[in-house]
Length: 146
Image (cartoon, rainbow, N blue to C red):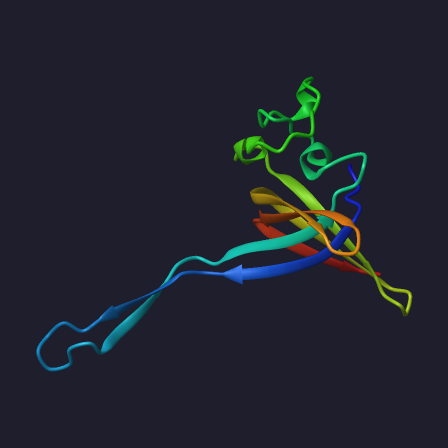
């Protein structure tokens, strides 16, 4: 298991596409008859500061060819779209741990995760900042509290 350091924001999202079907006869032209909804997509987006030792691709174990480094090929840490070649048959699990000020913990397991996109942003405001934004789709999640 790898720890993902430098996360500065985390956003969960549920979305789906809607399509309106309209009346086409002469009595009620343009009146919506029904709304067709697609299945719900579950995703989260995270933004993290790129650290000196690893970018997101290296942490997840993918090299520039999209091959998992656990298969014997070392991850080279390059961002060239290779991570989008992650096999659908090889999803992974993200675990998010939140520590409450009152002493309790909330642990969320995101299962069947697949990368949707990763973007690198370099900016100089008061100091140099290099951030990665990732969109990750997941199949299901489970919450545990203690």
